Amino acid sequence: MPKIKVENLTKIFGRQPHRAFDYLKRGWSKQDILKETGLTVGVNQVSFEVEAGEIFVIMGLSGSGKSTLVRLINRLIEPTAGSILIDGEDIVRMNAEQLQQVRRKKLGMVFQKFALFPHRTVLENVEFGLEVQNIPKKEREEKAKNALALVGLNGWENSFPDQLSGGMQQRVGLARALANDPDVLLMDEAFSALDPLIRKDMQDELLELQTTMQKTILFITHDLDEALKIGDRIALMKDGAIVQIGTPEEILTNPANEYVEKFVEDVDRSKVLAAEHVMKRAETITLDKGPR
Ligand code: ADP
Image (cartoon, rainbow, N blue to C red):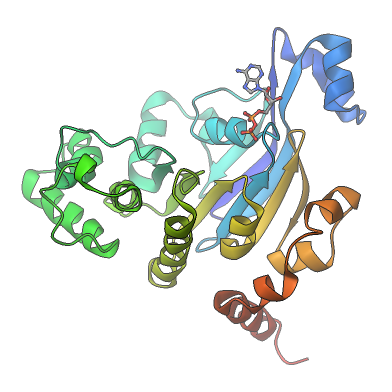
């Protein structure tokens, strides 16, 4: 069973959103639907599956529907149609209490702006999510310290966020998401606010961490280089729909249509394909297929 399975997920903004459905099914463009009905298609019949332990990147330009998709998965907004299954359970159809359980036990979120509390120490920030769950102080502290050690922030427990660099603050954000050892990490433009060099470090660090932690990661980014670097697979979005899902290699060497072709035309293929983890991944895929 896939860890995450999104099926036909659709979000149409505006009054009486179902009015747009027929047009969507007939393949009308988002622009034409807007003209005809005044409704905006945010996410258009999106389907994908993420396997446990996979880094699945949702990638697309501004306005392509990434934030809407994240807000749907976070259940901050209601879909017009479709389902989101985590471990086979549809979170769209859950009541508030069930959803809370899933959020606490299975989902860790990492955001671009870290969302750290300035008046709490680093340790207290990481403990926050555990506090809400009434986990006893001692256990909380232990979990938070372990998570901080994992992201290389040993010794910074008693500092305050503004004493840390941007990269370190993002690590605190990551530690906070990891503290409760969730199966799934939702990383929404998590590295987008970082300086380019620190951003590269964080990407490397995430890949390094992932070799041991093996989380299922849904990573949202508008940055193609980042997507190609860290994604086991990438879903490329345009106008709310997914235009191609594939490994970085597949997207680069076998683009589904002209849009994807244009999208990747400036990429230095040899550099992407020569990255250590990409080579390793290619080996694993070949091995999985058995002897040729
Ligand atoms: P991205 O995150 O890829 O930049 P968004 O998900 O923010 O894209 O936007 C996808 C589309 O949905 C855009 O056309 C945007 O204008 C529209 N949209 C997003 N939120 C709303 C909203 N609350 N009301 C109306 N339209 C929205």
